[in-house]
Image 1 (tube, rainbow, N blue to C red):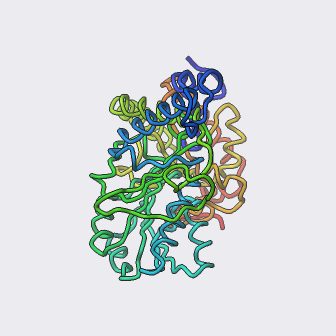
Image 2 (image 1 turned 180 degrees about the vertical axis):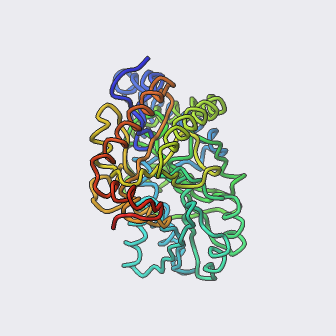
Image 3 (image 1 turned 60 degrees about the vertical axis):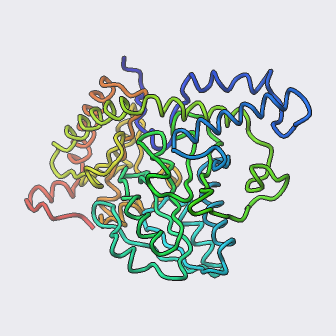
Length: 401
C-alpha cells in the first residue's frame, strides 16, 4: 500500500516499532520507579526491567551484560569512549587515529582533544570510502592509545574491515573504538569476533526511541578502563551518572531483541529493494554510485546525479523523504565531508542523494520513488544551462565548476 509521503531516510532516524512502544508504555505509568531505589518494589521492578534490557542488548552484539553502559545516545557514547580513553591512558600516550569520513560526533570530539594536547591522525579513504590498512599500520606507534574507525558509514553505508583493523591495532598494543550506530541491528555485529574494545550505538537507528543508546566497554582481554565524563551518583558502575531513562532503556532492549530475531530475513529483503531502486536510477545517464558496492549496509544507496543539484531534487520530490547527507549536518551549505573525503568534486557532492530503506519500506514505495526520481532528474537537467552545454560538448568528463 502506498501512503504519501514515502519515507526513505532511515539512516537519519527510524520510526519506533509498535512492539517497542508497547513494551515501554508501562514504565511511564504504573511501573515508574527509579532503579536506584533499592528499598521498595517500585525500584526493584524498574531495576529488573533495566537488567532485562541490558541482557537483550548484550545478546545482539555478543557481549556480557556487565559490559553495557547506557547513555543518552551514540553522540554521548562517542564522547565518553574517546575522551574517557584519552584521560585514562594519558600517561601511556596521547596519539589517537581516526578517519576523515567519521561522523561529526567523532571528528569534533577529536578536534576538542587536540586543544588539550592530543595528537590526532586523520586517515584518508579511497574512492570506495575504505581506509588503507597499510596506511593505518604505518601511523601506529608506541604513543597510540586509541584507533576510532566507524563500523558502517552513515552517508554511504560502506563497511570498514573491522576485524583486520582490530588485528593491526591490537598488535601495536592500542585499543579499538568503533561508532557502530549504523551497523548494530542491521547486520551481524559481534564484539568478540570483531575484536572491538569499545563500541557506540543508538536506539533510534534501529526502531527504538530517541534519547537513549549505549557504549560497550570490554571487561577482559584486555580490560578497558575509561574516565567518566559525568559525575554525580555513581550510576552505570560509576561511568555514567544520572537517573536511568527506564522507558527508553526498555525500548532499546526490545528494539535489539526484534533486530536480532529478524535480521537474516530483513537483510535479504532490504538488499533486494535497494538493488531494484539503485539499478533503476543508475540507468539514468551521468549517474554514479558513491561507495563500495560489496562492503556496505543492505538498506542504503548514495547516488550522484550529475547536473542536478540535490537541493533541487529534494524540493522536486516533495512526496519523498530523502536526504543529501547526514542529518546532523543538514543545515550546512558545505558539501558532504564524507563524499569530499572519497574524492568527489564539489559539484558531484552537491548532486548526491542518500536513499535509506528500512523495516516498513515496501516495493510499491520503491516503484514510486524510482518514477519520481527519474522524472525530477530529467526536469532539473532540462532547465540547466550546464546540462545543455555538457550535452552539446559530448564530453562525459566535463563538469561545471
